[in-house]
Length: 130
Image (tube, rainbow, N blue to C red):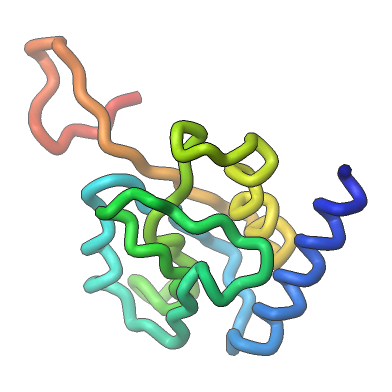
């Protein structure tokens, strides 16, 4: 199964190599409610997930499903606009495929975001929870 995974990752990487003008070192996976961050990015290439070989497609309505290469605050970045979840019926290997692919293209920093909440009255709206 690992060899199948490696083959799938290689095929996806080859596809991206033909489409993108640069290989960023920083990636951001946008979770629920954060897709609008792409408005702050100077987009160079926008690739729908469905075009990337073996890339899982989110069924969550608020996850547009785009792989965006561009510049944000003078940094070349790749942004995953949405992600897949275990509850959508994907295997753990499928869920981790995008992260593995980001490593394959050479990312050294990956920021993963999500929507979360808490009952602690000391939390404020919009606060980063650690």
